[in-house]
Amino acid sequence: MIILGTALLAVCHLLGIFLGDLLGQALGVKTNVGGVGIAMLLLIFARLYMQKRDFLPKLTELGVEYWGAMYIPVVVAMAAQQDMVAALRGGPVALLSAIAAVAVCACVIAVINRAERPQVEAQGAPKLHDNPLLAEAE
Image 1 (spheres, one colour):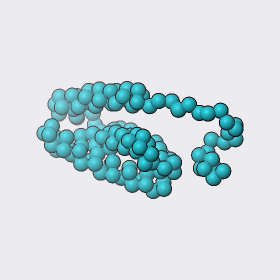
Image 2: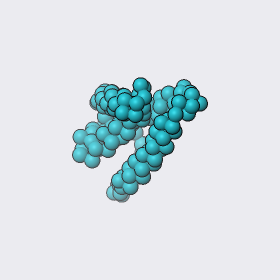
Image 3: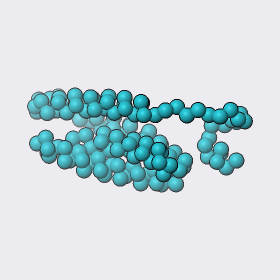
Image 4: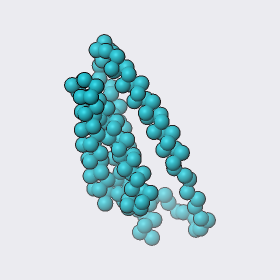
């Protein structure tokens, strides 16, 4: 079931790259604008959507969480390779897109934090471990 998490990541990545290319064309830039970030947001929204509707088995959720955690260093590494000085000299598009990306991310994080409600656990037998795979096997 972890492979479904990888498949979901792949679909989100392809859609993000496609939408980033479309956004670049709309802005008049011949490059991908924010495709990896869009893919990460799609992955977050897909996981939340599937989790609310119980379409996401626990093992698939673990796969999505794993790849989501691995995706963040990829985004940081890609951003570190970009030449920001050349981008800023190229025009105000880079600065405007950076400000817009930060604003959108801040809004999305606020919405996600408000949407998630803490789950109340019933008082039962004490847990001997935190591994969900072992909990399912018991």
